[in-house]
Length: 320
Image 1: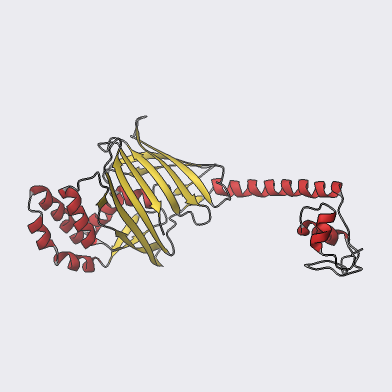
Image 2: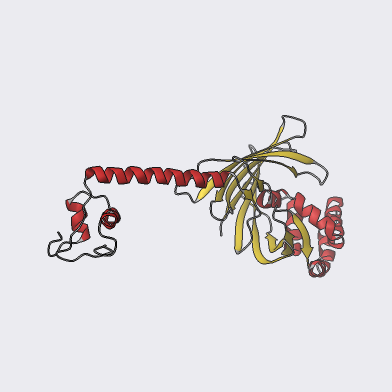
């Protein structure tokens, strides 16, 4: 019987009951169905059903079993899912670094995606790739300078992307061509050598043949690993597929392994990746990804690319 001035907090402390919720659960299970149930408060003279140690241990044991059963169901869903292109709403920003293994020189740039609309099974995003920056140990080469200028004058692009993460269409290319035409003469003058002319001519051809521009973007290692390297159908945590890396004709076998254990509080999970040369045990790339469990959005990735032609380390970190 509740004494005057007693609270739920007093009672669980007095009887060594772990939580108010457990007291409420036990009482409401045993009290008459239509009367005397307790919520967030009690009153003097109210009769309460108090669980003893045996009942408390039984409740805890049952809850552990149910929690394990629920976790097993969730893990099974997690390991047997069709991991689709996740950038289907909002804005996302990533810091990207690229470094040759064993070198102190690092180049940095940012990638951004902004969801625009879904139309005819394609997700349209404004995508951006920033100018290239470097750390204090890096001397920016002419190629990097030119690449920065190209990025500045090509992006943003409105890309139509399918559920596998493949870019299928570039929308409003005429606006990009217009911007490019206003700048290309200056770039040819500033980068007159053979390498400059070839890179600029390639951009020109891509802008006048959108299918080439789509192919070029799909072969970009940064968009490849951000958008589609880990998408696909997973069965028991495993996804096997093929991916283009060097050109549109070279496909490499990919093995993605989704880690069974969801990390920490369940908000993130991991995928390990191995990419091989076709018909060979030679590894072309090895990656490690951390994703948001709810949205499947990439949070961090580190990919080692072998013989490209050097051993390169690509890191992608979400900043927004």
